[in-house]
Amino acid sequence: MKVFLIVGSESGNAEMVGDCVKDALEAQGHEVSRIAAGAPADLDGRVLVVCSTTGLGDVPQNVEPLFQSLSSARPDLGAVRYGVIGMGDRNYKETFCGGPRKWDALLSSLGATRVGEPLELDATDHPCPDEDAVAWVSGWMAEG
Image 1 (spheres, helix red, strand yellow):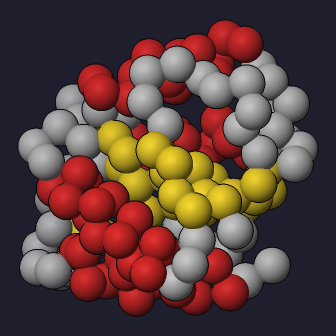
Image 2: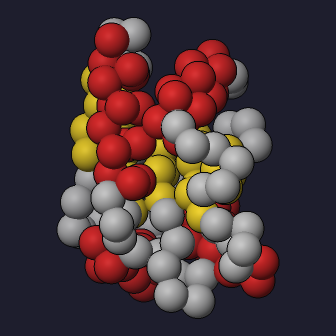
């Protein structure tokens, strides 16, 4: 199965998790394409967002252009099934996983269907977020 991977990272932790998830998916025989700056015209199938939070609950700068492009263009993503792996720190109660939650809300508002519950990793409770994410993604791929 083809999986589009969106990785939003400020400090590099989500980047590392995204790389591990990509490797795990490819090892299972899936084709993984990372999405960068612009919104792809052919976004369909499975989309996985791996994202940290920055500022006051914002998406990281490296995926802000893509987020804004999708928000403005409002494409019909009715054929998309997606999942979210969010990273944050519960010490920031008001903004914990704000970036990933914004992705979840955006994709849903564009007609995409979320598969399973988002994985929200708290930096203090998950010292090995890559291992937790790889374990989660196998179940996510098995769901609808």
